[in-house]
Amino acid sequence: MFQSRTHTCGALRIENCGEKVTLAGWMENVREVGSNFAFVILRDFYGTTQVVVEDPEMMKLVKSLNKETTLQVTGIVRERSSKNPKLPTGDIEIVPEKIDVLGRCRYNELPFEINRSRDADETQRLKYRYLDLRNPEVKNNIVLRCKVVAALRAAMAEHDFLEITTPILTASSPEGARDYLVPARKHPGKFYALPQAPQQFKQLLMTAGFDRYFQIAPCFRDEDARGDRSPGEFYQMDMEMAFAAQDDVFAIPEDVLPPIFAKFGKYNIASSAPFKRIPYLESMELYGSDKPDLRIDLIVQDMTDLVSGSEFAPFAAGNTVKAIVVSNSELTRKQIDQLCADTEVQAGQKPYWFRMEKDGSFVGGISKFLADKHDEIVEKLGLTPGCLVGVTAGKKLAAQKTAGVFRKLLGAAVPGHMDRERYEFCWVVDFPMYEIGEESGELEFCHNPFSMPGGGAETLDKAIAGEIDPLTITAQQYDLVCNGVELSSGAVRNHDPEIMVKAFSLVRLGEDDVKAKFPAMYNAFCYGAPPHAGIAPGVDRMVMLLAGEDSIREIIPFPMNKNAQDIMMGAPSEVTQKQLDELHIALVKPEENK
Image (cartoon, rainbow, N blue to C red; front, side):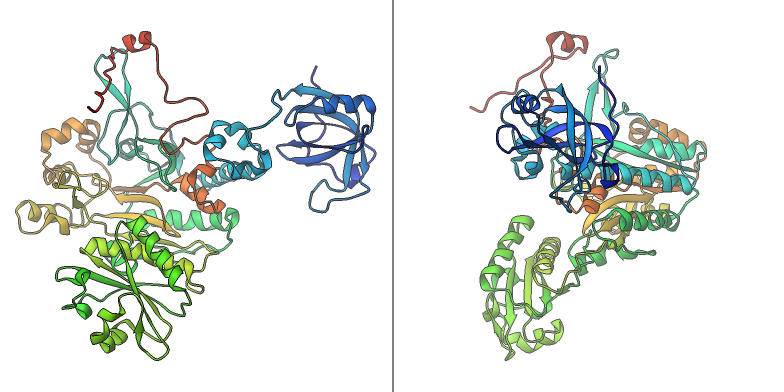
């Protein structure tokens, strides 16, 4: 029968010498010295301890075992003759009196070395995630996640927020991404949807009279993966406040997040309140992005007028031309070409460049097209000898976004332009309420359809009457950004049903459509809703930043791959015909391309 361990594998120290102890853990490694002597490394959640096997019978047992077999070791603690100062337990070792096998590893070879699992192919890591998580580096990211979530919960409770869970099975709602649908067995032909966010429920809680709500909320969106976004599901620290304006919401993250980032982060410097506030249009102009990395001191400048009339085709009339000036650049031509190629891959558009020499002349890249405007360019861009200038051109938004990508790559590549070891927060505010949809070509909500438009009903009335362009309407919406990563979106909510109907009318949805799509919210607001606002910082992205990881999958216990597959569990999987019949579902295979 299993006897509980007396200590963990990370607990024993020199003062424990002479004690009889029992440890349990995985056999990480065995180093045999001759035929009757071996060093066994035992590992558990807390650390490692060296076990010295000196008994011939025990040697027979150890030799028969594969690495990663779980063992229970009872023995005497003694001082090591050859100490390891790099290990907390490096001063001691265990001389075993008894070794019991608790769980035998039946494979002679592992899919990868546990302590080097991060070097393995990602598919192998995800397939054998339970082995990957034995790696202390991987495990520590999950431990960090647990500590951060606990700290967030404690901080929100201190600010008088109540943690309230909201439903997982709900109705489909147009919130910007594809829903995951769940067939309703008792209601043939109807479906639940997994919530893209608890948006409507948290607003209904405000209408119900709860003053401050939060939860560590699971959210489900059927969208493609990328480095900072997990396909399928993610978690956010969802919060909402009644009788609150934008400044009231800002005050909470500005108080909660900096101490957590300073305490748990890879870097111990984080922005203090108040965070810098940047209007969306200004952010796009100065940084080429609505999620600027303020650790980089480079800004984007406009040089459209400077190159008007140029024979260089990308500078043709109607195009916008942007410049990023990088001082003290010693990049080689090969390095610059690689940065340009990387920018083109990420932005989908090619950037250009030129350099100012010590004698003041322009060389390299597109310099020959700029000679006739040399003095004006030097004065307008503030150039000095040694400056490298990155240039982008095209339609305004494309030129801005390409400049934003080029800015980040240049800032990271040229020493002195990026303060890497800090967390720099900012708010991006005054987002557009509407945009022209890429697929539909028609007016659509730019972000959250439940945001209060700037100017309220009066602004919407002017747009409906054709007096102003709906694309000029801003929303009382904001994003929290840290180190170039969007941590969260939030907004002052549209709590007035009349204003809601007007806002939706501009995207071709009438009052009946609003009532049909959002019946609970529309009806609740008709009973007198308080002004309310909220935000939802992403927990996964937050922990990714704190851990200093580039991929969000490194901080999720059981992540899916880029194709939204759980290859460890075999999901998504086929189901039986009986299950389909119960759900009144018939499968129709897509026709093969002929």
